[in-house]
Image (cartoon, rainbow, N blue to C red; front, top):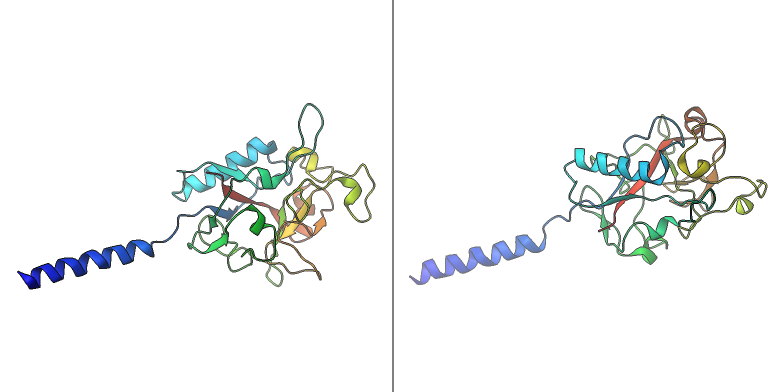
Length: 220
């Protein structure tokens, strides 16, 4: 009886230990593909739907997914900061590796957004600097704090320059702020805010190292 008792206790402790090290569900990814129409994502709603669709295809549809994108005010639309759309964290990639514990940490150097960890929804690494083709330009429309980047803040751009591809409805004219998920391509390359695109067309996004990809976060 004692031997059976000890075996039962051992099994129970083993199950507790295994539970403690269970992989965290995915709550962050880079889209494996964009809309195919440059910066025209169908607005924030269309971008969110794209996140949700990709997550569902990867078996992760039990959360509300939001695109990490900012929106400019105008035409009846309010200003929206990307950081305010994504919940409170923590966030993990498809491999169960932590990306950030909270919103503040996500927007500081202590975040874990690096090429090896900024995976797509299928757990695949996204090509970056040095790869062919390079796809490290990730659409955000944001500054490094995750807030809307106004046109007047873009180096070399006029005050009327757009930074969100007309609130993610243009696949032609306009511009958007992108980050580099691999943090390469400049002395202060950020995962969410590095430079402006040439335009919002698919061909121009690809020509400078992008593919119309964006970040998705589980907001609940």
